[in-house]
Length: 186
Image (cartoon, rainbow, N blue to C red; front, side):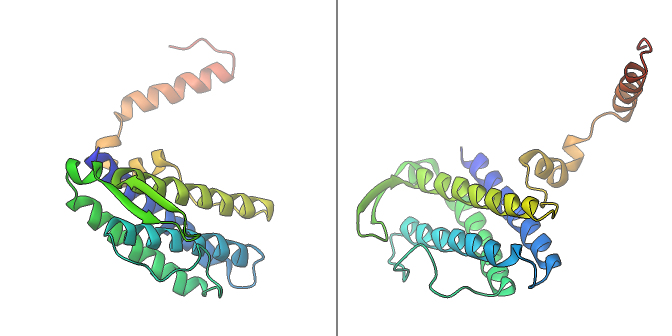
């Protein structure tokens, strides 16, 4: 699971970067920008809260939402730094540490207990959900969303291992073209 978590946090950083880069291209006057900042700043705060829980440290967030929204540039820098910290942190954990349960308090004061692995999975799935929300808002405003698929990430980040034989791909393309014209495939 350790290698999978490390890979998934590298994917999270890539997907966050793709989205932040796309948003930066929209400019401050896009109706998408303030909504994206709100969703992504919430993601960032939750990431930082759980980073503190993982280290069994206190955090300074009274809520999972900021009272004042940052600029997109400031948020992008913070989120990218947080993503790098998670990648580094996950690489140091062994299976026993991942399985260890950690007691903490949610921002509403309710007690919580999760394994480190569960906390890390929460950070991953929580971020993916909010990236999806931002992508939906982009689509509603006729803005193409950023690439965010795990398959796109794998084929970009691990390109040499993902390349198929050009001949096989070329033959498949020819068969697909023949089939669409009603011709028998070879």
